[in-house]
Length: 240
Ligand SMILES: C[S@@+](CC[C@H](N)C(=O)[O-])C[C@H]1O[C@@H](n2cnc3c(N)ncnc32)[C@H](O)[C@@H]1O
Ligand SMILES: Nc1nc2[nH]cc(C(=O)O)c2c(=O)[nH]1
Ligand code: SF4
Ligand SMILES: [Mg+2]
Picture: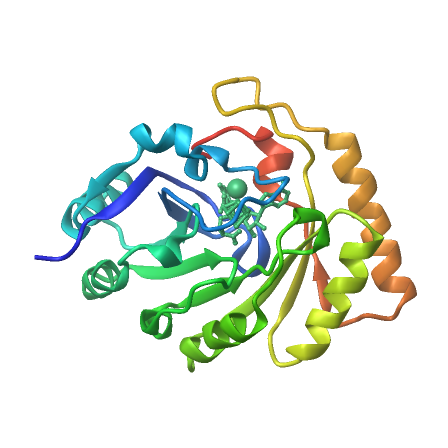
């Protein structure tokens, strides 16, 4: 019997709104609990202890049954996010889903390495820049890159300001082999219980334009700059 996974929400199909797989239809499996507390986290309902009562332990078969129900039994990309999905026992879920034809992408900050990263179809490593208030443990981050093995892996870095931008350049220089995505940060999301889901879209647009100008002026042509498409369309609404 596989260990239960702590689930915050399972939703979709929607489109992947960020990074390498932007636009691809996917079902999200969001796990509950995170070892980080980023100052600007847009998914606090899967992070803060006050939401713990909304997280349910589910065995892998139950998670896959819900994914199959949502997808109408048609295999697609399943995106594991959180919280930090790497702190959950996701290896058996990935094996079970792959046997049914599903593919798996995962978003993680790179603070916990697991051997099952090698089974992923896409590992999105999102190390946290200075504006987050977090400090990256680089040896552990390196372990995450190593754990991916031959599985496709990319870097996705959130940028709020100049300090984040310069930090991203350093990170990119450390990992020249990893495709790099830069994403403007969205500011001060409302609490999850507030259904308005309003974001400061003008501010996001300003940061996006600034980021494009900065990347182009620097001739940093390996960087791909993308907005959070789902935030443009639906603000910080949950379940989209
Ligand atoms: C909510 S996190 C969950 C997965 C994992 N904990 C991580 O941070 O990679 C998913 C993605 O959203 C990004 N993100 C979180 N808050 C954001 C914000 N306010 N603006 C832009 N991106 C944000 C994270 O950097 C990460 O790439
Ligand atoms: N559509 C959509 N795309 C996303 N990409 C990353 C997300 C996340 O919260 O991890 C996310 C999300 O919550 N929704
Ligand atoms: S690591 Fe990810 S889920 Fe955790 S607090 Fe930061 S953005 Fe939120
Ligand atoms: Mg999100």
